[in-house]
Amino acid sequence: MILHHIQTSAGNDNALQTCLRYAGKHDSVLLSGNGVNAILKRQWSMALSPFKVYLLRDDVIARGLTLQADGYALVDYAEFVALTLSHDKVISW
Image (cartoon, rainbow, N blue to C red; front, side, top):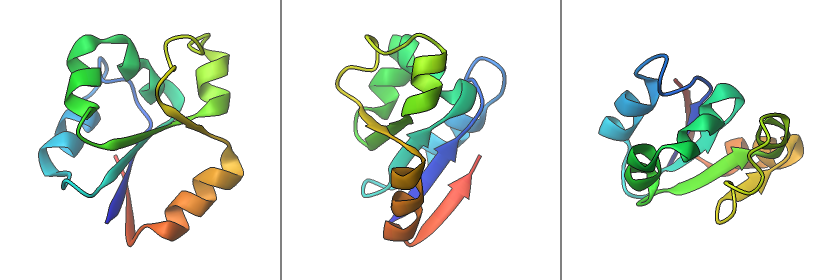
């Protein structure tokens, strides 16, 4: 079980696209930084739908995306650390 950590906007590079190509059905995806902007595009929210998706709460709030983040698991920094420990491996894209 892998935690895939996406930190950049899907509009700026191919990190999310590449991650989704290699992610397994039991893997999780954590979006932080500009990566949280992926929830704004239907294309990416649909592509993420088979996975357990976490959003870093502070980054969602900083970008004014609280309403759009409804339905996603929001985590704080302590929960982020707990996620890294509960997965076998973490890949930062």
